[in-house]
Length: 113
Image 1 (cartoon, one colour):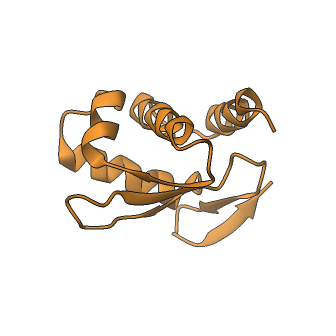
Image 2 (image 1 turned 120 degrees about the vertical axis):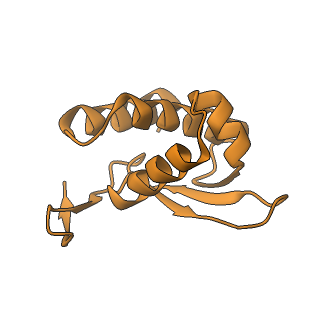
Image 3 (image 1 turned 45 degrees about the horizontal axis):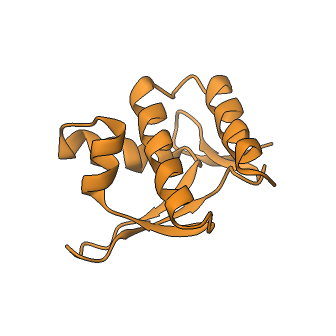
């Protein structure tokens, strides 16, 4: 799969998802930049500081809110490291057209293809 196809898959999912805002899109774009820098490994490490710069997010509270939402909405799997030097772990869940984990309004998880 080409990177253009992978990015297109992500954008297709976001256009259908009413919960996604411009802040989510900025963060997804920042994740894409870090993914590219990792050599397009499905699992890659990121730093909060770098993602905040790339996505133009000024508040750490906003960053944490939106990165956790992307995890909850099934776009990524986010594993924070809580270590100042090691990066947090990111795994794409939607890049390879895999069904996304989606939670309904009551918080119950289901799959959407």
